[in-house]
Length: 478
Image 1 (spheres, rainbow, N blue to C red):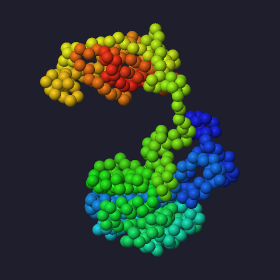
Image 2 (cartoon, helix red, strand yellow):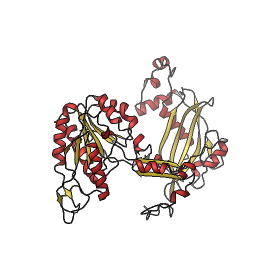
Image 3 (tube, one colour):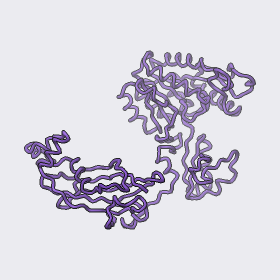
Image 4 (cartoon, rainbow, N blue to C red):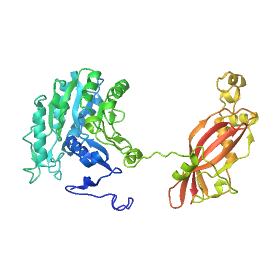
C-alpha cells in the first residue's frame, strides 16, 4: 500500500515498538482506531488527551464469539458436519489467535455428546509444530508470555467447564528445534450447565481454545449467545429459515456480524471468522462498540463530518453538485455538446413539448408486448383507483423524454450506461403533453480520457406537474 503511490506520502506510517508520547499530540480532528484486548482499549480510552480533546475513538476488542448448531440438525446432516469443521478450524487457524475465533460452541442438548465426540476426533488430527515442516497444521502462539496467559485462562475456565480434549502441558511436536517454543495442544472444554459457568462467558483464552455447551431450546441458545455481552461474529449452522430468522431477531443486537452456513452456501462461504470488506466489522459491548470496513462506510469513520446550511445555490457551488432548488443555467450549446471539462453542475436544457396520443400508446404496447390493462383496456383502467382511465406506459414516457433531450450527433457523450432513482409520479393520459428538463448534476473523472456525468431528468406535463424523475448516467469524453 505504501509503495503504490495511491496515498499521499506519509499517509501510512509504521512504528515498531512503543509509541512514546505520540498520543499527547492528538487533537479534535484526529481519530484513534484500536484493535486488541479490552484491557488495553480501556487504558487508551482513559488517556487524558483523548478524554480532554474528545478524540474520536473506535475499538475492535476481544470478544467471546459464539457458534450455534441449529435445533434442526442431526448427527448425519450436512449442517452438523459443517459445524464441527468450522469450530475445529477456528480453534486451530493461527493457533486460535484471532479476534473472531469461536470461543463458545453451542449445540442442542441431545446432540452435545455427538458434537463432543466429533470435535475431539477432528482435533486429534491437528498436527502441531514448525509450520515449515511437512504436514504441520498448527504453529506456535506469539510468545511464551502468551502461552502462560492462555494456560492461566484455561485453568480459570476449566473450574466450571472441564477439559474434554487436549493437554495444557503436553503436545507432540513436529519439526527440528521446536522444543521450548510457545506450542500447545488444542483444548476443548465442556460446560454442561452453561448458566452456572460464569467464566465461560467472561474469560477469553486467546489461543486454540473453545468451550462446548448445550442449549435447551432456541430461546436458551439466544440468551447464552448474548451472555457474552457483545461479539464481533456469531455463526449459525441451520437449514431452517425460521430458525435463522428467530436468531436474527433475538441475537442480532449483540453481535456485529451474523453468518449463516448450510448445505446450500457452504462451498462459497468464507466462514465464521473471515470479515469481508463490504461488511461492517466490529461489534457492540465487549467487542468494543467500534466499526471497521463496511465499504465506503468504513472510510467515513475517518472523515470529519460537518453539516452545511445555506441557500441551494450557494451550497451547490460549495459541494460542486447541483442540489434541488438551486438555479440552473443554459446557453446556446446543447449540454451533450460540452466535453467533460466544460460541463458545470446546473447547466440545463428545457425541451419542447410532445403530445402523447392513444395511437402512440397502442403502438408502443404492441411493439414491446406490454399490453397491461392500464394501457389497453379503458373500462378496467377507469375502475383503477390509480389510473382513472388508460395511461401511457412509464417506459414510453422515458423513451419519449430521451427523444426530446438527446442530441444525436457524435460528440463528447460516449455512452448512456444507466439510470437511477426512477420514479413515476403522475399518470400521463392520451392527449397530455410532456417535456423534459435535463440538468447536469455532478461529474466524476474515471480515466484520463473520460468521466461520468450524472444528470437529473425531470419530465413534466402541460400543467408543469412532475410526471417522472430520474438520474441519467453518461460517460463523457474529457
